[in-house]
Amino acid sequence: MKLPSLVLTFVCLLGCADGKAIFGNGDFSRASHSTLRGFSSHSNGVPFNQHASWTIPDQQFSSDDVISKSTTLALALRGGGCSDSDPTLFFKIGLGSILEAALMLGTIVASVKVSDKYPSIPTVFDLPLLELLASFVIIFASSLFGSIVDGSLSVASNQVLSPNVVPGDPGWYSKLKKPSWNPPGWVFPIMWLIVSKPTQLCAVSRILKFGISKGEDGATKLPLAILGMYVFHLSLGDAWNKVFFGLQCPGRGAAVITLFFGCLITSAYLFFTLDEQAGYYMLPTIGWVAIATALNWNIYRNNK
Picture 1 (cartoon, rainbow, N blue to C red):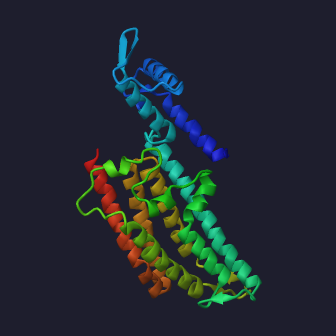
Picture 2: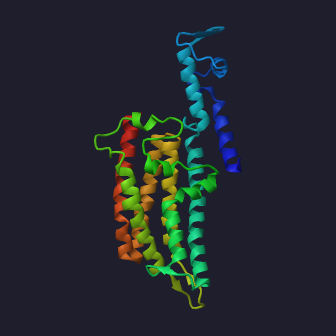
């Protein structure tokens, strides 16, 4: 197990030490003791008796209580209980997003440097093939860079194709109260894979084509600030997937997607200042993320 995963696991276990955070009654010893007894009987191949009960001095638990508490414990252990405090969680999000963005930006810069060094590399649409491949990877597989940072598999790729399937609790998203205008599931892959991602690729390709220049010393100059904002917005999108679908925290997810949306608009504006057509290519993504942001806030308000 990689170090970031060990740190996250350790933090989750620390959260489990707080009885109120997990069970809400402040009596961790009694609740955990009854839960462990329930787990031990189930692990021996004996299913729960729906009418069974366990008696502990001064406290009695039914099987339903045990199942409920054990489920809550499992959610807390995997992060679904949002056990981190807001500062801790947002610090992790910020640090992870910055590191992920740095990896993506480094990938683009490396592709440009290599293309300059080896001019024999073939071009596609007047762009070196290596630069086009690098752009394709960061746009269509940005969550891979997040996986490198946090040492775990991102849920982002699953949410593109299966928006109603979430890790840990398959029925969580489908059970949430959603507005009448909630997009159907089949719209998600169409918007992301056929509309949003390809138009972003067109936009980034134009930035690389018209935004790279040569200095007086012959060194290649890239619009690092513009590309940096763009990859940062991608990393925030991955962070939102992890918070909303992975941790199943709509409230904190609403905060993250709002920042994500703001960085997306900023990125599109910066693209527009360099190449107007590149800015226009970002409009479909802006429209789709605007819907996602409104949907997240609506879900948060209706499921408190």
